[in-house]
Length: 137
Length: 130
View 1 (cartoon, rainbow over the protein chains, first blue to last red):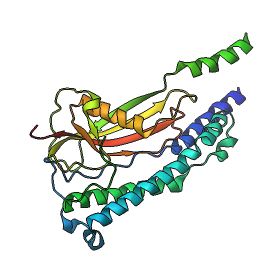
View 2 (view 1 turned 30 degrees about the vertical axis):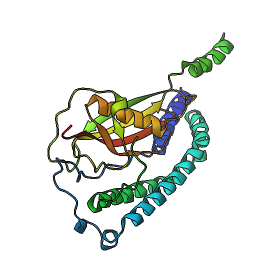
View 3 (view 1 turned 90 degrees about the vertical axis):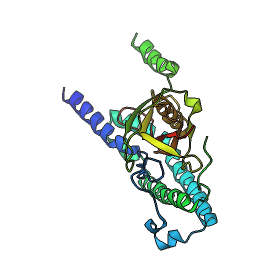
View 4 (view 1 turned 120 degrees about the vertical axis):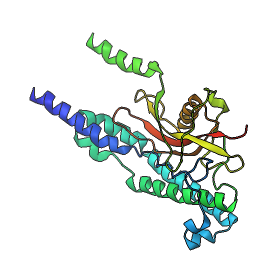
């Protein structure tokens, strides 16, 4: 009875801890470009350094952000098999949880890169520059 | 008997082949003054998806979409950006949207209810003056 209780408790703990392994998609920025937007972005909304950026500088930073995102995502995905195996055993025995790799730094970096890209997208709209992201599909 | 089920259960799990399933939700877009009523449902293949914004066609916002794609068993392939993108398109299509702008993705990981979970967000929009 006690063993079964411990097993269930450890499974619950493992599931709760491992649920932190998923990084949610970053939140969307406020709408400033649609016809029904409450307000539209202006150049004064940006920092002086951002407002001074040219279209080519925006595009170059967009490419840099894309490659950094791919590198960070690659690091997270590289640990997937290890995390799944550790997660499987953690559901049986609590100890292997230490074997998981959360990639917390990469996930924080990705969230920051999305934030910066949102600024560049908004800046591109205000300056009538091409979008600093991959074309639509 | 016990040894048979020991083999059969994982085999069934592998052969189940359900792959993945998705759940979705919609909320009003932050910064949009008024919501726009949904139009008739359309095909997901007709919906445009972009990680950027659309500047060459005026649009109004239908709402912000959030989707979660989960794999069914530990043996299925992990959810990918492509699968999340498809789920965003399907949800947008069901709302009568023409496009999903500002699409973004979480990273794949072990979730509370699945061995492989990936989130996606996007803004469903409908073009004006079609």
